[in-house]
Image (cartoon, rainbow, N blue to C red; front, side, top):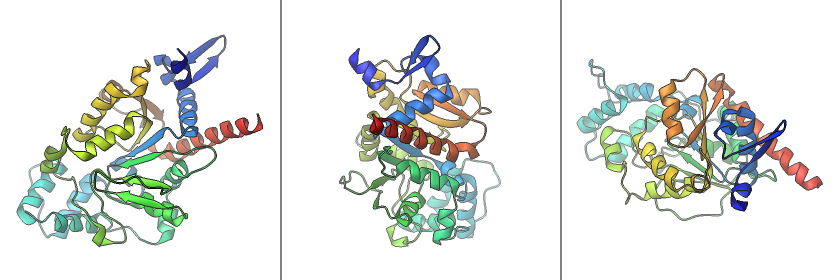
Length: 319
């Protein structure tokens, strides 16, 4: 019982008290935010970013990126509709067979085609600013880990611009460091500034087949270890990535929150208009929805959690 109370968050509503073991707790946005603020203060939050976050950084979405890659190599898109991962698979087989790094460099060129590398361009993104604040070390606490399924290193670039020491990890296993933040790139890295830092990437159908569900894959093990002891916050992820879903199935089974009787171990930012089946899919993985009116609200939502955590820290210092 003591362990349950220590790991949980209790919120008084009138004459009753609601805790994180109660499913109705997670249906109240203000309760979820208080929970995240508490865990942020303990350094027990991990942030997980997907393609939707990169779109918030003004980078192309998946479909546009694939179209631009075809344009870069002068190849015409097939007229028959197919998935972006299948399209990229066909292109890699026909133009880059056995040339993983050359393919990565072409993807990098298309990824940053319309993006300026100037510091001012980095600093004006509200989402980057909010994520930077969420990650920055402070008396109020900060997210202890960042996993991004995106190839770009704009979060790192932003944090470095703000004077933080950051490392990008694109190969697993990796050494833990005393940097302010280690950013994990399980799908590979395509740096904004230095092309020589490109790695092979998980981008095509064949790439996903190679890594999904493989217990021996070092990245799958690292992600499981990172997520199993934190309250994860998912941003910009649809759930279509089968590799991530495979990892989350295992995390749900082993997570400390699950063992303590909590219905959810993580939170995902989404909108009220999202398809119910998709929301339910995430719920089945132990991830509670945090409904927003629009995705444009995500920066203010993250900053609001930071402010709640700061208020908690202020109250503790006064007492």
